Image (cartoon, rainbow over all chains, first blue to last red; front, side, top):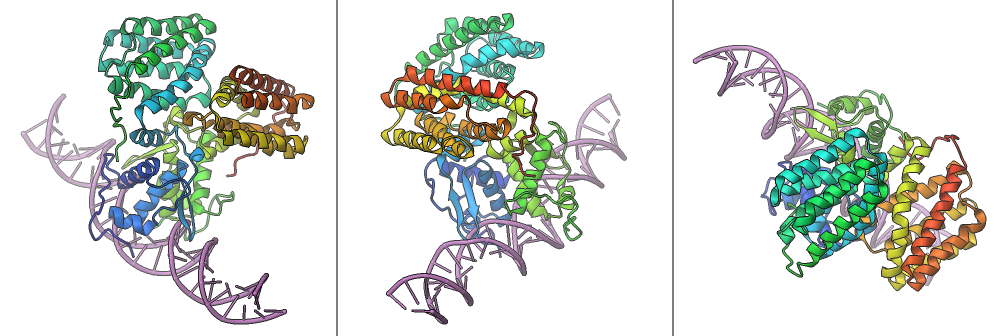
Length: 253
Length: 253
DNA sequence: CTGGCCAAATTATCATACAAATATGGATTG
DNA sequence: CAATCCATATTTGTATGATAATTTGGCCAG
């Protein structure tokens, strides 16, 4: 038998994506990240989820497998599904990060992110200066040109993201790439949070140019310094917006 | 209808875990990471996998959803499943990393890992010195005591891993925790690769003690320096083993 | 040549049934 | 009374077969 379903959709897992198992996964994922189910807690069983979402067991199980693959869950026969300890959560997964941000204080989020960015991005810039291929340098350059054209405002976010991701790719180290997701999330949400995406508007373009030039010249030391300088500006921008607490509205379900 | 299955298991997805969908996921994951299916390539469809593994569509689909959740795949109706570009792969996922190591040159692996470790671990130690809770400090201390007791050899690996993971946890930054998987993999495999896990056996314990003391005193600068010093020793150990190319045998299917 | 429409391929979802694992409590036995 | 074994109930794991939804690609008409 298939519990639920033929009845009515009790709690309609909203959100887009149009895949039901995806919606279910997002809904459950959000509940875990928001603390409705704490690490160690046992989740409702498959039959329960079927009733809750009005979905078939097949669909629910695919959602559960998705969450398991992201380190949020582990299922055992006769026991059910248990929430994994936080250190196993794949926080650098795009979905998990989105669910995380949806229920986190934005200031705490930016604080953690900037801490890591200041550790990594100067070194990423330095590595890029040493390891970049001509093609990768071109990608960075083109992103920078687009930034210059876009001037300020919302349109400048996308090229900015591309710039930082291209830089990251140019570092040529697989184990650094997962941070692209974090950087992207940070830059994208910075605008919505501070409503001015550019820290120190006058220096925004020049400081990026500083990184580009250093990477072009292959000057690791200068690249490191330029990247750090940009991040310091970003710190100031964020610090200039105290507990505004505009809820980040990134996640979907 | 259910393709395959009732016939015979053509290519028996070996490996442990005892869950069929897990074995299938590991087998396909290994094939993707080893380049059998390159990014952009279209994979066999569900019916094909059913025949190949002698599994039901239910099982195959759960495996595919698992891989999708790790960023290796994306499925679309009428198209099939396509391998995602490498930058979307969740390389800091435990499984993905295992599959990656299974088909990678060990020297290249250690090179990339050490590059990242030298960037992160000194700063992790510094953050731990500033942010650690008493409980976290105790965890680090206990791990260190176990290392001292264990002396050299294989038994010293586990406490060493615990030491570094406890340090990481004490940094108290969510976005750093995913690196625990990489650090664990590195330390665990170092022993098998160099057959001497301890770099500079005489200095192995003292250098860890240096980190512990600095963290205990809350001296960020000293912690940073001590962590870097340890990593430099590790570099030397690895460098001392040129193209031995003992294949790492971590992954399972 | 252009636009729209049809058909085929593939994933998405559903319903149902049975298998396997395992925690739990109760019976059995020393 | 204690320890062991065992039956049973619960929950996930797997199989099967059917139908829906999506979308590419080509066909056809204007």
